[in-house]
Every structure is written in C-alpha cells, then in structure tokens.
Image (tube, helix red, strand yellow):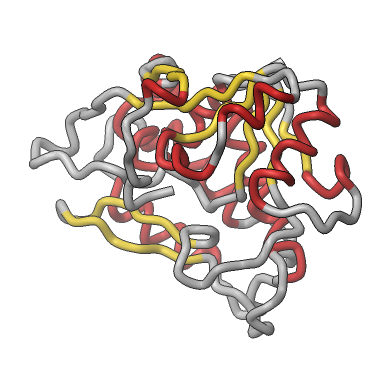
Length: 245
C-alpha cells in the first residue's frame, strides 16, 4: 500500500500527477494553513513564449485560516480566465481536447477553495485515466494536534500504508528510521527530464498541467506519467522543489 500526502493545488504541474499515479491512495490536506506565497490557488501557463501567472482569486480572510476555511472571491470571472487561456493555446495541437476540461474546472460552482481545488484534481485525474482514490485528510484523521512528520505517519498508519512517497524536494523533512520503526518504507519521487515542443520556441519548463495537455494531449501526457523514479532516502540527493506546483 503506497500512500502520498500533499496540499491541493490549482492545475498543478505534471510531477504532482506522476505522484498521484505512483501510489495506491492519495491524500490531500484540507485542515492546513493557507499560504499566500505558495501555489495553492495559482499557477502558470504559456503565452507568447513566456510563463504567465493565473490565479483563482479568494475572498478576504484571516491569515490563520486553513485551506478549507477560505472562499473563492465572489467576483471571480471564470469566463474571462478561460478566454485568456484559450487565446494562449488556440493553436496548440490538443486544444480542442483539453479546453473543455479547463472550462469545467474553472466554472465549477464550489465557493469553498478546498472543494474547488479537489474538484479540479479529481476531474484532471479522470481525464488522464488515473484511478488512484483521492482522499481528504480530515475525513481520515479527524481533529488532530499532530504536525509535520508525525501527522504524515499518523495518516499512513490509519490507511495501512507500507510505503510513503514524497516529492524529492522533501528529502530533508523526513527521517527514514522513524518510518522503518513503524513498518513503513520511505520513498521519494524524482521526475526525469521532460521537454516537448511549444510552438517551436525555446521550451519553458514547470508550467501547469494545462500546458502539458495542450501540447501532448491525453495519451501523450499519460505516457509521461511514468517518466519518474522512486528512490530510497539515501539515493535522493538534496534538492529543492521546482518553482511550480
């Protein structure tokens, strides 16, 4: 039983979906603090050869609120954002196949941030044929005071995990001996170098899964999901997460 646990993100980069596809259960945190400078409700797409940030705007809220306590802004105009993305990718080879997914996610009627992000992840996984169940942390652990590694271990134990898989950027966050003491292996997902044609210009990496789908389609993107390796702690060189999510 392989398990991975992450925060939810808006149309995250392909490494996030490689992680989902590599495990038997994928857990997303809802009761975890929202961070303004992260990638929870924003990402990047390609326009005129440059990476452009797009955002799911939020209603004003206190800094200490969890993701599940934040709301989408009442004046969010999904059609306007859809038009911007469509304008950027209209000539992409898989535009007709991909744009309906983008529209369905952005036009989802959930006012709650967490529910909106979960819907986006679920729809994108279905589009890619990823069958891994996506679970909500609070529904597994209930109320908890556990944090960081202890919280991960607790969730893994409740799910009967034999292996916990984390992106390679989190190598320094976990102690393999703690996992071994509880009968679990610790593995880190390392994506292989990935590039593909983007309108014939220089490749811009670490963009949203939207970009990957627009240029490679459903089947081409599915083939890329396996372009990664699961490494033991001692095999995973220290690394920071790429500037994408």
